[in-house]
Length: 92
Image (cartoon, rainbow, N blue to C red; front, side, top):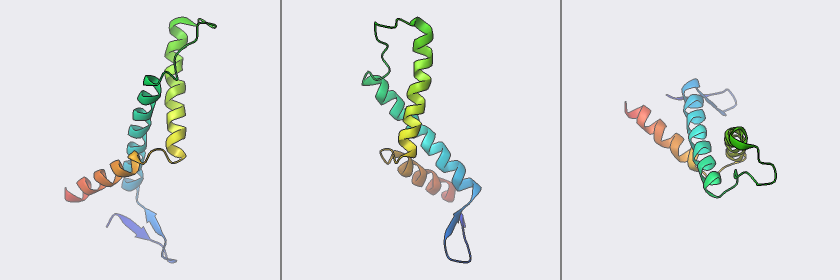
C-alpha cells in the first residue's frame, strides 16, 4: 500500500509519493517556464541592456515564477503526471 492512514482517518503520503509529486511539480514548472518564455515574459528590454548575463539569470527568474505558479495550483499538469507515475509504479 502506498499511503498510510492515521488514527483519525486522514491519509499520510509515503516518501515515494512525495518524491513522485515533487518530480511531477518540477516537470510542470519546466513546462510553464517554457510557455512563459515563448510568450515573451523573460524577454530583456532595450532600456537596461544587461547582455548575456541578464539573459542567463532571466531564465532562473522564469523557472522560479513557474514553480510559484505550480505551488499556487498550476494548470493541473502535475497532478495528472503524479497519477500516471503512481500507476506506473504500482504496475511494476
